[in-house]
Amino acid sequence: MSAEITKAGGALAIRPDQTTWTEQQGAVLRQSGIDNQVATEELSAFLHLCQRTRLDPFSRQIYLIGRWDNRQQRKVYTPQTSIDGYRVIAHRAAADAGHPLGYDDTLWCAKDGRWQDVWLSDAPPAAAKVTVIRNGMRFSAVARYSEYVQTKKGGEPSGLWGKMPATMVAKCAEALALRKAFPHDLAGVYTAEEMAQADNPAAEERHLRKVQPGEGDPWATPGPGAEQAGAAAVKGRSQPAQDIADVAGTTTDRDAVKELYRQAHAEGLLAETVKTSDRELLELGAYLIARGQQLAEPTPTGDDEVMDAKVVDTPAPTTVQDADAAAAERELRAAAATVGLDNLDEEFERSYGLPISEAAARDLRGMTAILTGTAA
Image 1 (cartoon, helix red, strand yellow):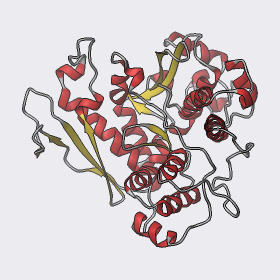
Image 2 (cartoon, helix red, strand yellow):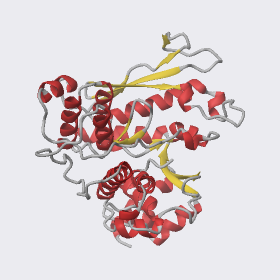
Image 3 (tube, one colour):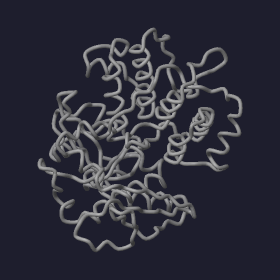
């Protein structure tokens, strides 16, 4: 054992250059409730996340929670932390960058749409709003109570959601706002407050779903007026991943979406996890591709080229199913490159019993969700 590891916390300390869990670390993780159903990819992604966020799983700052997935017929493990862990990451990142960090007063919304800065009613609020101020820039987020509340089988709130609904929904809004303010530091990890509703009855039908991108490659060559449309969409400034996704979700100009994709690619934001208008979670690059397809321009040909250099060339699809699988394969290979999984084909075949080239889009996106930490 090196002196550096001993000084940093002994044999359980996670080294920045570590690529797999040590035997001692694995033993402690198993004692925390991670059983043999956990996939190698889930453990690898969790290690990468611990290194990136600098949170300690052995101090319960961050942990893996297993939930049964009917599609995969096993537990699927998702990393999560508490709002306190989120605050630790945010304050550390702000300090490292030399940025001041603050908040506006939390606001709660009544069912009639009126906002107030103190919630005194015994009934739960309809929503909460939190604004994070980083280096003078404001990042606001609203969390609706109905979207996050944890319930029992009968539908009534359970746990702290029944005792402190205003506090719980405010924590969800704070997590959303912090993730907007610190997209690089907080992408891929979600708070226990946000994830509580994943344990609701039939939660697998409404939590962490992946959108289905249309077939065809994304675009690189600007169309007529793209520069002006893109400039108007981004308001002349650089935006973090969630802001770009929000603009893409409201614009009806496909050229503006193309411009947003190029901006995200230039700023290294394509692999960041964002929340779409209907609360689906996925990587920004995949969302922008899907959004562009929704705006109904034919599949590009000729001089158009793939925007993301990490996207792997695949044979031209011949059916809608083939096109969906090809798009899913590109997403999977981009996710594997992001987490540094070099033996993707081998791991996929070991997990699903068939090569990637023969897999359905559903299985490909299932593994992408595991690698990006967005599995239901």
